[in-house]
Amino acid sequence: MSKVYTTEELIQILADERQACLKGKRLKLEVTVSGNPLIDQFIKTDGLQKFTAYQDFKAAIHDYQRENQVSGIVWRDVTVKGKSLHYPEVNTELIALSQDLSIIKAAKNSILEFWYEVTADMDLYLSFNNSKQHQQILQPDVERIAQRTEWVSLWKWENLNFLEMILQLGWGQPEEACYKRGRPQSGSEYIHAVNPGNRPIG
Image 1 (cartoon, helix red, strand yellow):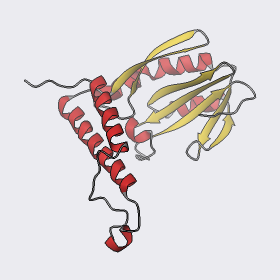
Image 2: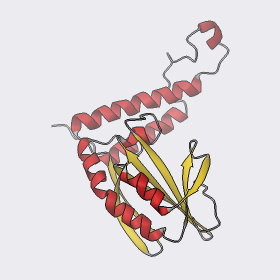
Image 3: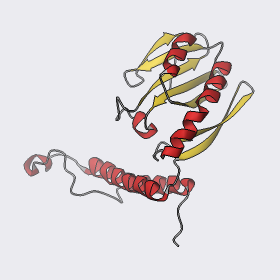
């Protein structure tokens, strides 16, 4: 029986392949910008060829995940203001299997509880226009959005003078929600919590 790769091994394989594609070691040569050979001879296509080669490889890894039931979940630890949380999230390069979706949905309430606790005295902003713009909101606004979502995830940006907590409120498939490819079946909203007087940077 052949060995089945683990989640962590698949993440490393994808990272290695991404580097190979970025360095031009992998190209999908048949990819052209316009499809018109007369026009394409004047346009640099190597960036598109690198990107497409990686996307094809990533799709093959996703097929492997499905065939071998390899989870896309990684477990994260976050500590904010002396409070810690151990929680699941789907790696951004992998897909969520149906059992993965059950796990992240089950973790939603504990992540939200942690979020509300550590951001109680912070200013909250809803990001829109691909996170280029932010509108200040209140905790009841977050609660309304959270009621309509299936799962949540967290990020923290912190240094000595700054703290930003980003809450992703999502539905559907995480890999599609992250890049806004799957709307309306999959998607997410991002809430940024910052210390009073600060603006989001993430």
